[in-house]
Each structure stands twice: as C-alpha cells, then as structure tokens.
Length: 116
Image 1: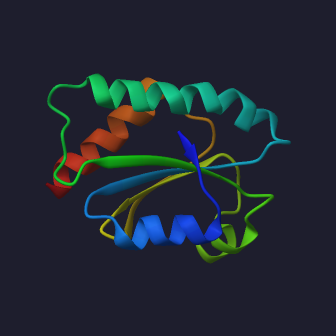
Image 2 (image 1 turned 135 degrees about the vertical axis):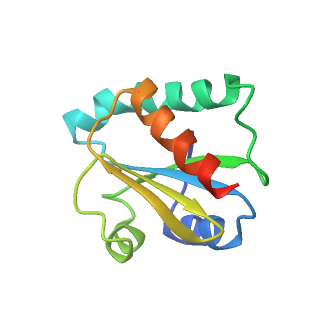
C-alpha cells in the first residue's frame, strides 16, 4: 500500500488505464488501525488470485484524511475507513467501515470482473 497526497491521488485516479483501489484512513481512528492489516491482505489475496488479472492492472493506494482533506471532501468521504474503487477515473465501488479482507476482496473482484 502506497500513501499518496491530494494531488497525487487525483492524478493517479484520472490518469489510470486500469483500476485504482484507495483506502481513506485516519491515524487517530481505532477502526482504521484494525483495517490497515486487512487492506494489506486484500492486496495479497487479489495478487494471488490467478484468475484476477484485469486489463491495465490494479493500483492500491491509501490516503490520510487528516493530512489530505481536499480529495477526501471532493469524493464525499465522510467515514473512515472508506475504500473506493475507480476504473478509468470513475468511481465504481464504495465500502465504508473495516471490512475483513476475504469479504472485501471478493466484492472488489466481482465488480472488476463485471467491468472487463
């Protein structure tokens, strides 16, 4: 998981050929502290899934909402953790709360498969 700032996030989302998965996190939030390892595991689950290889790939990012309020507000993120999935600049998935990795990875894969 790579942390980005407001400007980097906007550029990564708008310039991506493939999928961009972004976790909106706060360093002060207990649910976010519990979700961080789950988010790493989501990356691992998706990368190990032999049938999951979307065109253009998938980039996984994270952003600290406290340090980067501009993109957080423009994307209407009001709770943390929130995970957003983008495809070619368009938001195609949103999950609020600290999902467990297998459940969220399955939901992400299902949405991606419908897009390809």
